[in-house]
Amino acid sequence: MLAMNYRGPRRVRIDHKPMPTIKHPEDAIVRVTRSCICGSDLHLYNGNVPDTRVGMTFGHEFIGVVEEIGPEVHKVKVGDQVLVPFNIACGKCTFCQQGLYGNCHESNPQATAVGGIFGYSHTAGGYDGGQAEFVRVPYANFGPTVIPPEMDPDDAVLLTDVVPTGYQAAEMGGIQPGDTVVVFGAGPVGIMAARCAWLFGAGRVIVIDHVDYRLEFVRNYAPCEAYNFKEMDDPVLFIKKITDWLGADVCIDAVGAEAEGSALQTITGRKLLIQAGSATALHWAINSVKKGGIVSIVGVYGPTDNLVPIGNVVNKGITIRANQASVKRLLPRLIEHIQNGILNPKAMITHRVPLEEVAEAYNIFANKLDNCIKPVLIPSAKG
Amino acid sequence: METIETKPKDYSHILGWGIDADPKNDPTYPIKNRTDRDGVPVEQKGYTWERPSQQPVDIEVLHSNERPNVSAVFGTSVPPSGLSGHIRRFAFRFSESEYGHWLPLLIADRVNVVEGIIDDLKQSRVPNIFAEKGMKADWKYNRQGLLRQALIGVVVTATVFAFLSRKKRPHKA
Image (cartoon, each protein chain N blue to C red):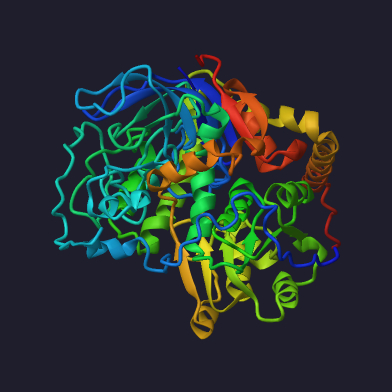
């Protein structure tokens, strides 16, 4: 089968790899019909996530058709069209029982801090991902969800990560009606977080980024205020000024390790790798939130340390809420929102690229070429 | 700087405004389910859940020393091998809290890149760096940037070459 093959920082290619096989009685093999490149894939692509091994296939956002099932699979059957949450969850461990499906303790031997994630290094379990024609899906009785027949596949593929992550970012903000919410990052997750902040009753939604075409998109899509931090001397001061000098009630970090805006953070976090990515957005979020406010983090960072103003967290009495999205928990509500026309995720898809051109797709997305917001890879073997 | 927009007061134009507002959404959610699940008290006793059956461990799986076992399922993407594999095995002697764990893994990743190139060459395959970097997209969407990069590369290479091949002046007696 054809699959994306990681060869080193900023080097990927398409290769023939062996077909995945059933390794566990609850496994399924899914023929991929669409997969996305996620902003967090760029951390892998840039070589920032430890234990990313050459030869691995990335991709944790994908949908497809069940081709084969293990002997103990009874919740899906061959031929079902399924969307597959990016987190691999057993549904049985103490964390899954609490609805923390992004923190399953039975899917990742390599690290206890994170559950298993498709195509996301050996630190996240060592699973090959969905940027391929076929993929092995563990715990097929729990994770894969049959796509409602009337749902657009482009909406379905974004339900595997982007939509739930953006929604949970807003949910973790504990937004109260009338709150001012600032979202750092106008990538797909930030765009969705801004849109979802309204669903929780936000009174004002502000997005900060430095890419004009994305700011223009989110300004219309969310809809919200959107500002370019490169046009301001100090984003934190700017936010204080436009929030009656007290700060936002809720700040959301929807950027993570690839943040721009601070030379110190960029050099130490993205070039020298002596911290776990550039924590600029998180730094700004902590300093922009009101005393007693909430900082919600869905931006992904590496497993080591980051330079953040923790003293200000204490002094301002900030609550920090963070997690990988619990996709399975949120799916019923989000499917409902899409079916009712409340959310329209597919509008974020700007590029549809054949799987064979995966290297070009990564370059376009990583370097924000051709006004790219969200690229989808489509295997030629799709049904 | 853009003009600061006026704070909206009427949200009727925003589809779905407030439909998921939940006054019970407090910072303990969903971890509060730790002791109380849908109103039913839950007792926590460590690894007491009914574990899924174990995926056969038929490849080398490095597991965190912060857990007593291999998780019930695991990925089989790229088992450790070669020099990078030795470094990874060393890294897993340390907990996830230690730099001794993560820094060797990052080093192993870089060593692994060289191993990947050697593997390619062993199979008579010269890695096409331009294709692997997706530079066709640069040519299509960022030609000016690509040409600028190429020009800088040529200038730097020429400067280094000129510096290395310069004739040394004889020392005065």
